[in-house]
Length: 251
Image (cartoon, rainbow, N blue to C red; front, side):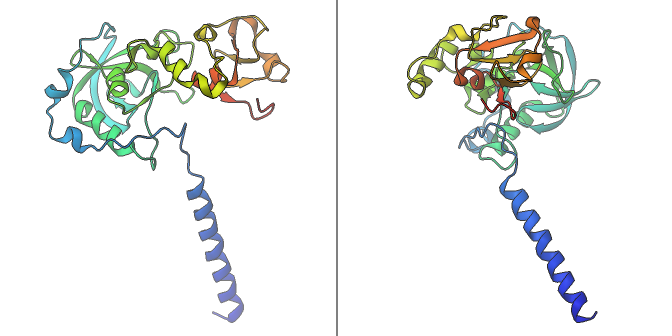
């Protein structure tokens, strides 16, 4: 190889390294949720030790099948159905602290075992085609268990048959959650903003069939039909319910 060829090879390698570094530094982290719970907390416990802490769920077992694979702490594969996304909850993404513990917790309770699903009647699948459901293990709501163990955060994305704030660690659900965050928003947050509305009085709007929220003047916001329109009184309300800001109007 001549000198010119060697220089081109070096430049090519440096470019590859640069792309790798940039992609690694900008790796997807989802909402950024993390926790520092070690899996050693559960490794010495039997499944019954964990399950017996929880009451039987009142969710309905609409489908039953074997869990053949655990993708992460909030997504599994079930024989005869495919990928299932735990509705109403979100666990740490790959590369984020807590990812391994949340995933292994679900593996411990689900992998190669029969699980039942209560599929969300208001929204069967997400935008990736995964079924949205409560995962039931031996009569217990695993979505609720992840929240109460601190292994997941609430991710409420209407429309949904389920209201995951009722599964949150505190017994007062969303009202207590929102009050603990209201100081960062001038104390103006209100649980009344949870309701969907076709009114234009809200400061921000979204579609019940989307995951983005907008200013009412946004060209995409104006395309939302009245029957699907959801309004929020504050930016915080929209984000706390799982919506992301529109990249066009940048609310």
